[in-house]
Length: 160
Image 1 (cartoon, rainbow, N blue to C red):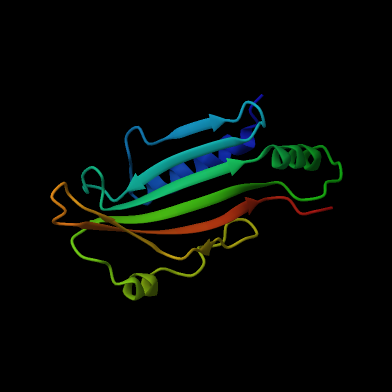
Image 2 (cartoon, rainbow, N blue to C red):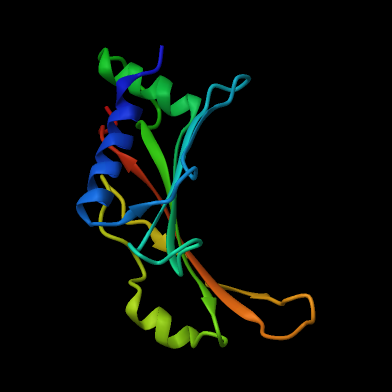
């Protein structure tokens, strides 16, 4: 049976994104279960409203609840000891795309914090930026994109 903790985390994240007046990208939401390992993954994408498809600014968000973390949660819930506390892994990828010129990385990084807001006991850290160049068929009019991700985890239980 699917434990409500993971679906509660998904619901809370959806509510926060809607409250921030971001626009969910149609057909960009996936809920996956690894049948062999038991890991659960939820992925979604949100953009700024009115940006068109694809939006110029988009956030791709992934929540992953590995099997071992599910077991740790169950042990914590029933009062048993556990080695590592339960947590849900979080990845947020900020993508700025359809740019006419190569982005000034120093300017972009100066407005993005090195760590995100605290999630549970952790502050997800910013990765190094990636710049992508897309050319048309005639190899003219390149468009640029920039991606920066924040990786961390949400934990809710202390180790015993």
